[in-house]
Amino acid sequence: MTTIKDVARLAKVSITSASYALNGTGTISESTRERVRQAAEQLNYHANPFARNLKKQKSRTIGVFITRFGGLFYEDILEGIHDAILQSEYELIVCPESHTMRRILTQRMVDAAIVFDTKVQDATIIKVASEKYPVVVLDRYLEAEHVFPVLIDNRQGVREAFTHLYQQGARRIFFVSGALDSYDNAERMQAFLEEGQKKQLPIQVYNGNFTEESGYNVARMIIAAHDLPEAVFCANDQMAIGFMKAMKECNLNAPEDISIVGFDDIQLASYVHPTLSTIGASRRIWGSTAINRLIDFLDNDRPFITDRIPTRLIPRESSCKHQPSST
Image (tube, rainbow, N blue to C red; front, side):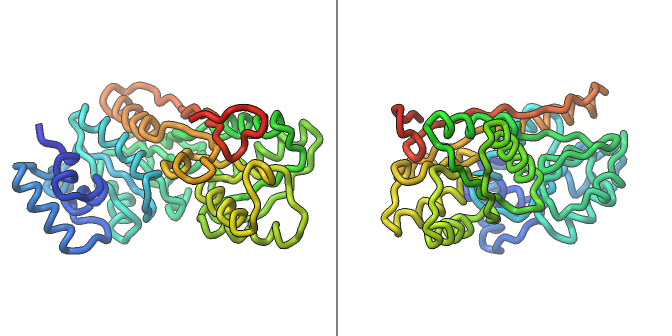
């Protein structure tokens, strides 16, 4: 059976872009939409029946409401969602930030929703969620009826990162924060500060915003102050990569001068020099877990299990002073 993956491959676009093109959503170019349409026609692939089912009581469609994005982080989550959907009788529509997205969500034009967009307010999610319209959230923890969080086990990952740096001999450790409105960032920062307290180590916090540029700028500021830490834990890999870039420009090396650990295990982490130690979790399992739990609730009336996706430390060159690095 031809799938949207096959269409995306033939059109040479991501699965997300193919979904946008076939569902008439997203901000992609008309040439891309046309290329996807031609690929779908060539493969005899018929887009999901979302449009013609919207007015029916049950659309058999699940909406994914996701922030505007780029890169493999979100793509991996969506791959997991698509893989799970293909094993079900449901269709999928991916809705980026837009007026159309808000209307589809607030008017309950799909059977259920997965939300990964901090711009969708808690009050909106709580208002629309119901027994007949469950909502899974991937970017926050909400205690509300028929709102189900499926989240990364941030605390487990942070404990592993802190223990690793401590065992490498680091005692003066800085934390580079991501966006302050991010639930994941808040959990990671709180957990890291708590680990520092357990060892009676004061942790200095510097604010970034999850971008490589912000990690770079924080590093330049720290280096200019001539008060270097022994180690830095960044709330995501992109900031860690930016931090190491600034170090290199200032003739500083990781881990000899400063040990660096990130979070997320993005693909680039294993290709930068030095390779980046990080905390990883399977984003495909994250996405597939969200869908499978949701479908179980819709079709089988099973109680929703609140999941934490397990993490693991991936020690690499950027932090390993006293033992061989591994991938």
